[in-house]
Length: 249
Image 1: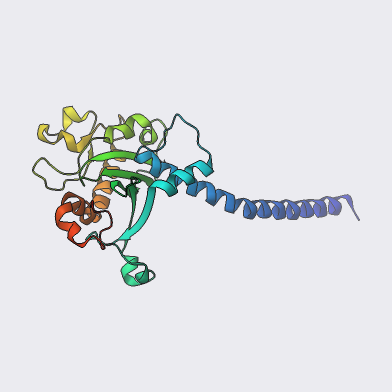
Image 2 (image 1 turned 90 degrees about the vertical axis):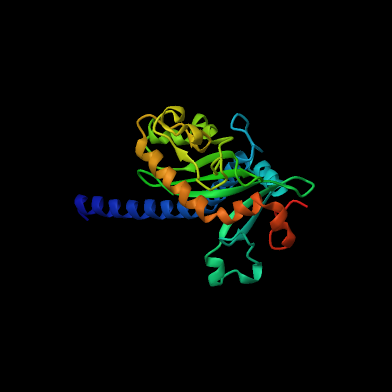
């Protein structure tokens, strides 16, 4: 066998062996990667309601424990009614909206968390927005995945930006739904004076990211408005508490 043929055969065998090893490694790590992604999402849900902090380290087991003790996931329709388990897999369930309820040990819902899946400048922006049980006040906002430019739109993942949302409202002073908007620069210099509570400070040099996120948040919050209205009108909606388990007793 010539040297050239031996070299070619060696290269082919090496490629096959490496390819097999890489495939095996990828398959073996896939379950671990999915588990870590689920834990990271749970951590962001907990962070949005103030149950974990960025300056502390938590094991995956601890995250799961805190989540199971405090958070409950439900599927609701656009009017805020819980979709019963018997309807899962049906067309009704396909139109459902997931929400995460944060409840006290006494069973009182303190807040509800809405998953964010918004268009960004370069790709999807994924996170969670938590609202107080008044159906109007934001208590937390987190981003766990995005494709925005580091140092510009990528600043949406920073605490300073996310903390801007805390205390802001999704309703105007008159009570009508208006969502939450990201201003061009400082909110107090560009937003209407009577609507400052509905705006957060923007990111310098990332106007388009703010614009896309503003549009995405409005679309998502509009679809969840039935849930928010239920919280805003607790006394009325709790007459049928079996359909709305978040109602305060």
